[in-house]
Length: 261
Image (cartoon, rainbow, N blue to C red; front, side):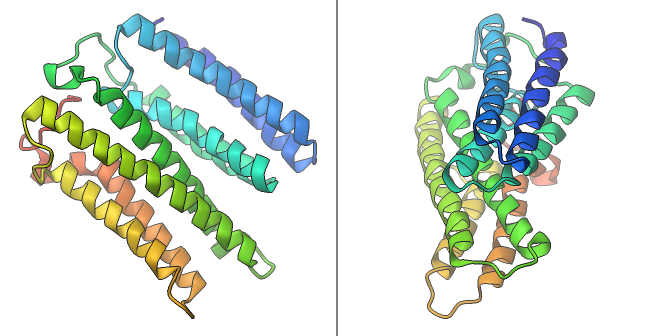
């Protein structure tokens, strides 16, 4: 499977996701679930095909991690929709997935079979995959925050805050597991669990920022809207940790995480 085939799989998957989002608005629950799931199957089929073709997990470059993020976003949307029936969540998750798909279409990365020794650890794949799923759940929580802050006209209910908290809680748990897997990978690849590398430092900042949100939500008489704004800041920090760090001078040539170049 070559990267040139990505556009065809992506178009088919997006058509299914858009159909699912439209069906959700039309209160056709079964069609919404099935169509979204079919889109996920199509998209994941390309990921599996790339895995087989490259003879390694497609996780080395930013483009490859965007593949997983584009897959996990609609999956997170489907989970939220199936549990709480928020018909708009499939639309938002689809739009976000399309954005990352378009980035991959217009800015493709180099996809080769080459894998440096540090990435040949058994901990590499679970570390990145778990992190991408965590990012997708936290992205869904951010979508909830944006909706509740700027789009919802009626007063926000306690259940809606609870949905956001649940997404953050589960996403934070997966992020924690991702960090632990990363520490085990670092020990095997570089001989130490943690080195305060720029990437690792921003990972710690992101982890603590979401921990602040979780604790703030448990303070009696806190301001819920302030919590939602805090969540937006957390997501900005997450983006810095994921890809923004690559543009900082501190990471140029000094980070052990420059293996994607």
